[in-house]
Length: 103
Image 1: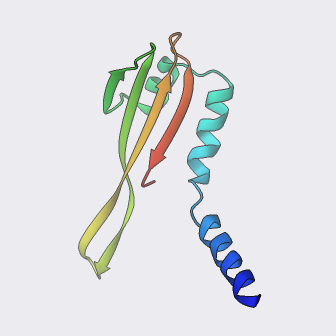
Image 2: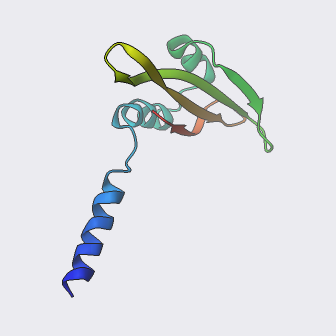
């Protein structure tokens, strides 16, 4: 019985630690609900690293950024975190969805 609760507690901690990036969510969620368009993102975030057309209309934009990193030895062998942000725009050019990895 105790093992069961211990396992459930460990799984809960594991899932809680796999949350997203609160700073990105705080900036992208309002942008999505306010209907920000491609011009707003290009003005405030700069030109995207890549663009592609979506199957049912609209565009997908990709922003690649370096967001921190870690150094294994003092001042030696710095490995940066490469953040990738995907923005999906609908046919009218409004933000429809977003996701990100390694941010």
